[in-house]
Image (cartoon, rainbow, N blue to C red; front, side):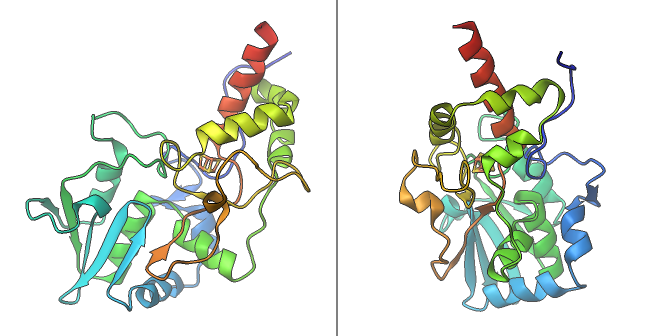
Amino acid sequence: MESSGGAPFGCDDPAGGEDERLRGGVPLLYVLRDMPGELDALLETLLEPGHLRVGQLEIAVVEERYEVRHVEDFGRAELELFTRPEDARQLSLYDEAGDFRPLKTAPNLRRGWLLRLGTIADLHRALDYFYPAMLGVWRDFHAGRLTPVPLRTTLARQTGMYAVTRKLTDEQAQALIGSFCRSDTGCLKRILWPIAPGLPVASLPREKFETADSGDEMPLFCHEACNLLVAKAREVVKSSKTT
Ligand code: SF4
C-alpha cells in the first residue's frame, strides 16, 4: 500500500527550495566539500578570457566587475539593473510569463535584466542561485570525483508513493527522458547517467551527452535523475496501469 505525500529521491532539489540541505541558499553538499575560496578561484580562472557562458547566462568581466545577463540579451542596452547576488534568486524564480520555474536548469530564464557584481564571491553566490551547485559538480566531474547514478538505481531507492516508479519499463524510460529532458524545451543539463549499466539513453541527440567544454562555456551536468523526472515516471507508470 502506498503512503501519501513525501518527495521522490532524486538529485538535489530541482525546485531550488530552501530546505535542510541548503545553508544560506547554498547547497549543503557543496558547502561540505568546498575548501574556502576554492570554487571562487576556479570561477575566476574560467573567466580569464573575459567572458563565460553558463546555461542561459552570459557572464562578462567589465572594468574589474562582473556583468551577468541572459545570453539573448547580449548587446541589448535597455536592461533593468540589479546589484546584489541575492537578486539572482528572484530573477530565477519565474519565467517570462510570470510562471514559477520548478526546474532551475529549464531553458526558460526570463530576459531584460543586468546583474552587476563587484567580487568573484558575489558572482559565485549568484551563480548558485541561478544554477545550484553546478560549478561544484563541474569541478567534481573534471576531478574524476563524480559518480553518475543509473536511472534504475535512483528508481530502486524510491519509497512510498514513488516506489511504483520501479515498474517503469525501459521503453517508457526512453520515451520519458526523450521528452522531459530535451534541451530545447525541458532542461539544459547534459546527461551523464545511463538507464541501467549497459543501457544508455537513446532517445536524445548525441549533444545531450557531450562532456567536453567548448572553451567559453561551462556545461551543466546531470549525474543523477532529478526529483521532477522521478515524479513524471510515477505518472507514466500510473497512467499505463489505467489504460
Ligand atoms: S533528469 Fe533530466 S530534467 Fe532532471 S535535471 Fe537531469 S537532465 Fe534535467
